[in-house]
Length: 306
Image (cartoon, rainbow, N blue to C red; front, side, top):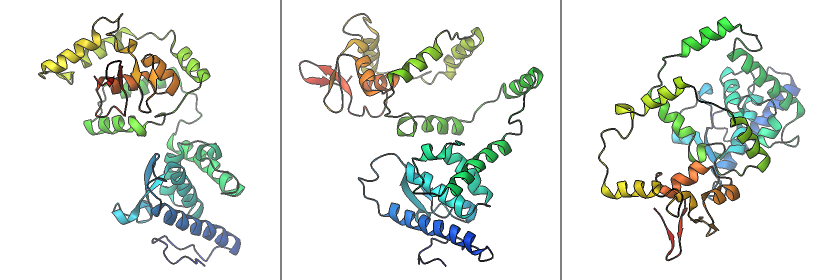
């Protein structure tokens, strides 16, 4: 029987199961409860990295969105929590979708979650690998099928003209920016950078796409349409684009990193930190709300943020 007093309202394990199965599920139920208590008592230092909010009692089991039912967890612990839940309650459909979302449908769960045999039995990991594969097949009726050109054309036509709501666009933008971006702050190997570079070589933008981009950025569709900019802002834009071959070119100026490191130019900073060029450029030009400690280096006063 469960020997932990505070079980957060989690459903009890059915005693109709045979003893081996009951003990197996109850073991992981107790581990899940201890994991939640552990995360509830984490220090600010332990939560200094990338974290995600987790429903202690999942919504599919009756949990709510109230503060008492939410806990902040490092992403690795969040993965562990969902692996535990699907192990405890393998027949709850909502938990199956949750594990698919958290693990991104990956079959290599051990690598994705940074887990090993000491955390979960081979039986648990085998079940998860099978379950994520089944989820993908159930969610995609055409999984593994060879589609004819006619069918592909129909699918393509059905998506043409569809417009995303502003709410959806905002969610997509938020999910891809800053710490929410899975590649945020990562350092990529030279081999991977070369692979990305090669994959984009020879790519030609079609005339149709160019026309769409032109329409999207003109008139009322332009986010800056009808706005009045201050002289200070105009001067700033002018400085960023003037004399692109000389010292006024932002990409040719020295850069000061948040740790005090001086880089010869933006590209040097990108090469040494692995942060995308566009991201550092936006920080340095003041386009984002925060420059994250980055600024252009100035010989006279050490640094100068444009």
